[in-house]
Length: 262
Image 1 (cartoon, rainbow, N blue to C red):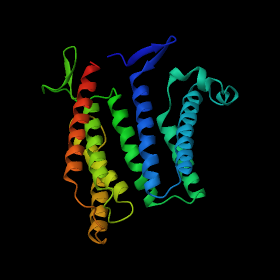
Image 2 (cartoon, one colour):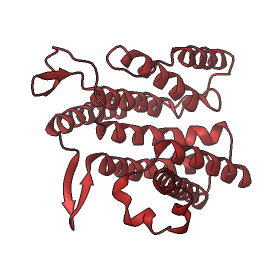
Image 3 (cartoon, one colour):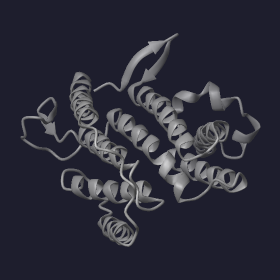
């Protein structure tokens, strides 16, 4: 399978890059909306998103260039953009993005569990799109939904992750207005994502953070039981039905898009 989706002015445009860009776009919209709901100024949240994104890109590109040119990469900063087809060092970018985000939120006095609840849905949306662009597949299988590469049929791990992340997003999106404690969305996402990875480790060679899943689940359950119940919004049957329909349509769209790549 060729991971190049199309060429723009002779430059290859990769599926993964397009999907991550789409995820960042929609994730940003959702995060800005949730930030306002958590009383975080729009401009403050927007600057946080732009700052962490730029830091991830810059540090990730320098990580790649440093591995090839060493200290000389700092003397040729234009290579960050002229050799962008070499990709981004995700681990380095993530570390520096976390450092920037921590310093920024502490400096603007917005860091806390409430802030983590605000950004979690947007992060999950990014994970959905990035999973759809991934080329990391699972073990061989004879299941009818397997992805075939010639005579080799494997588990469609990117599809499993995309559907799993979207299900987690949908669950937390439904409960986010009736929370018992700050951090309920973020901690719930941490537990569910850990369980998702642990479950999918049965079908692919990936780490299984089952210890994290148990600890996060126990912490979530303890805080949920020992926190006062919220004042619930009135049940809206029409809204629930419409959200369920949208959920099913998105699931179908994810499946169709994924298999259209092969």
